[in-house]
Structure formats: C-alpha cells, structure tokens
Length: 87
Image 1 (tube, rainbow, N blue to C red):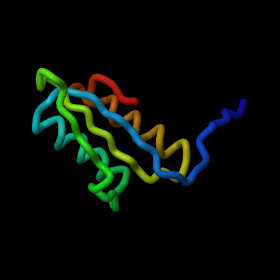
Image 2: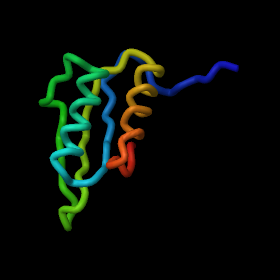
Image 3: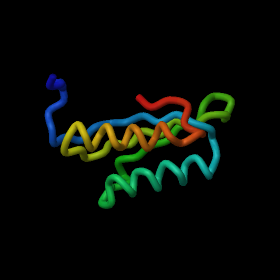
Image 4: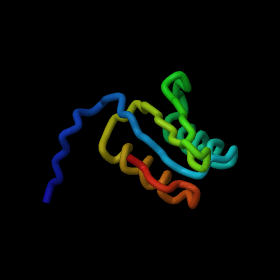
C-alpha cells in the first residue's frame, strides 16, 4: 500500500514546536534542526513565549526534500521530553 501526500517535495515547510520555555529546550531544538538540516538558515526561525512565559513556541521553516526526511525530523522532535506538541 502506497501512501500519498498532499505536500509537493522539495519545499520549505513550516514546523511549529511547542515546549517548556527554557534555554535547554531551545538548544535541544536547535541541535535537532542542525542534525537534519546542517545548512539551516536561522533567519527562518521565530520564537514566541506563552502569555505566562511557561512555554515557548518555535516555528522553523525547514527545507525538506521528501516525506521520509520530514517524518524523521518529526520523530526526533517528539522524542524530546520537553516537547509538548509539534504541528
């Protein structure tokens, strides 16, 4: 059975990562981005703390070449215990 996707690759794909607002969380996310996208342009990353400053939303627009590449990135993000949600 072949899965189809509505995303056309290659493309720049925005990924929102929500987690604990801490330097460790931010640095962990940067390390995961660097692992999957060594030439990532950090101008394509934005961050916004929650109203009470407990959580941090990071949006990274990453250059993906395939569904497998995107899936691998999502899997590594969700393995991090400080990550609450990946959209």
